[in-house]
Length: 252
Image 1 (cartoon, rainbow, N blue to C red):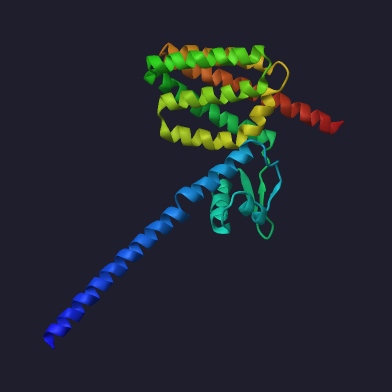
Image 2: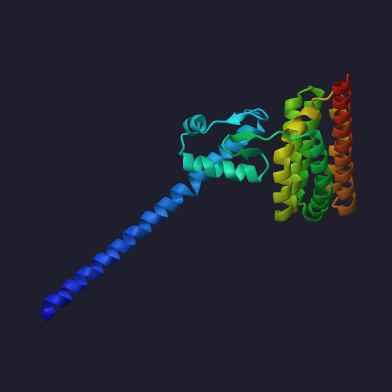
C-alpha cells in the first residue's frame, strides 16, 4: 500500500511539474504574441502611416477597418491606439472612437520652443562625442541636402533634414533627450513638411544646416549649440509668419 501511495505521489508530482512547465511555456508564448512583436508591429505601422500623412488630421480611425488593414486583433489595435494617444498623435473620444489629432500652428510654435532648448543641448553633446567616421557622414549628408535643393526636390530635402537631426541625436547618445525630441517631432511632422514647401524656405534653412554640420564636425560644443538654436529660431520665425498669414486670410 505504501509503495502504491509513493508511486501515486511521484506520478502526481510529475504531472504537476509537466502542467506547471506547460502553463509557463503557454504564458511565455502568449506574452510574446500579445505584448512584444505583434503589438509593436501594429503600433509602429499605424504610427508611420499617420506621420506619412496617410491619415488626415481629424480623420476617424475605424477599428473594424484597421484590424482588417493591419491583420490584427482589436485587443492589439486598442493597445496601439492608447500608445499613440499618449504621444499626442491621436485623440480617443468617449463613444466616438479614435481620430487623428490636429496640431495647431500655435501648438507647433510651443513645441519648437521646447525643441530649441533640448536640441541645442543635444548638438553640444554631439560635438563632444563625434568620431571621424561620423564627421564624414555628416558632410555627405550636407552634400546630399545641397543637391536636393539644387534639384528643387523638396520631398528629398525634407527627408534629409529629418535624417540630419536624427544623426546628431544618434551621435550625442543622450537617450532622455532623444525620447523627448522624437515624441515632439511626431506631433510636428506635418508642419515641418509644409514649411519645407514654402517658397524660399530651403535657401534659408540650408546654410543653417551646414552651420550645424560645421560646428559639430569642429568638435565645438558651444558653436554647435548656438547653430542648432539659431536654426530652430528660424523655424519659429517661419511658423509665426505662417500663423500670421493664416490669421490674415481668416479675417478677409
